[in-house]
Image (cartoon, rainbow, N blue to C red; front, side, top):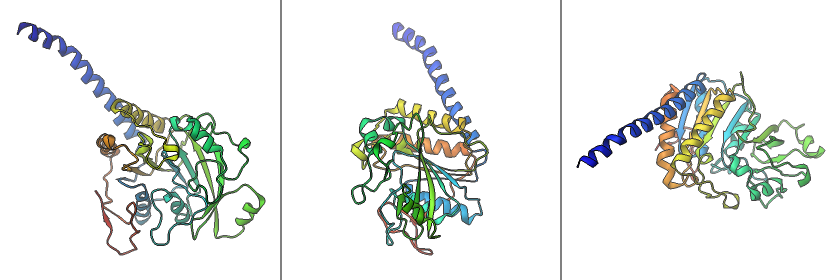
Amino acid sequence: MKKLKKFAIALIPIVLILVLIWGIFYTQDSSKIKTICKKLQLIDINIDHSQALDVIETAREKNIEIPDTIINFDTHSDLFVYQKISPKYGAQIYNWINELVIKNPEINTVYWVMPKAEAIDEIMQWNFMDQDVEGIRSCMEGNSKKPEEEVNPNVHKTPYVQYFWIDTQSGWMEEIATAKDEEKLKNPRYKKIKVITCTEETLPNFRNKKVFLSLDMDYISNSGYDTTGGWENNLNEKEIDKATSKMLSTIRKRNIRPEIISITLSPFYVPEDDEEQIKSFMEFFLNYSGKEDIIKEYSRQDGKPQVPKGGKKYKDV
């Protein structure tokens, strides 16, 4: 009994140190969030990434200025080439940014921040350089029309910049690579957008720049579901904490001070055993953002038709 008592006493300093480290870690992250959210006017935590469109629509309804730039931390680009938006279902989780740029004339620049582990993966790099032949692949993952030798897939060293035209009526999008592509832009029906693919390491500074920040949490831990080549990045609990803290540090250091923020859980894409920890982070971010999550109903839900104006919306869960 005495040995047990001595052992318990010996553990006290260790426990206190661990508690102190834990407290410092979360205090630092809460401070990062407060700094990031200095200019915040609207925040929403949601389930499906297409619900970010509801966030922008709510911002417009509240007369919040729509910025010209979106920064999307995500394992996927959520942009599709060679495909129209479904008239019945509307944009879905995989092509919601197509709708974002055609319904918001202000938005003309998209930053896709992909995980470094994804950017340096050999299969993903090959796919990044490969030409996206119409009808073969539709998700925008880098090169579309250029010769492979002209494409540098090392976006963790140098951002990859592309320009696209997009049909503002259908959402059909193609890379601008020829004079014929440039001709499209003479018709006001077509809009030019700039897409920059990068990682945290190559994300530029956004000081005094107004932005819409979108965080898809499969950026942190990814199950491989519906991801090219089945690429996955399933992190353990400590790795998730480290990755979220690093992401917050990057956002703060790059002077990203968004007016609008959307944070998405993305079930299936986020491994099921990570969901509760990811949800806790989302709630933690919301808590220290200084704003309330006011959007309780959505016009969009994964795999379901978009609710028309005045229709019964999908409940927040």
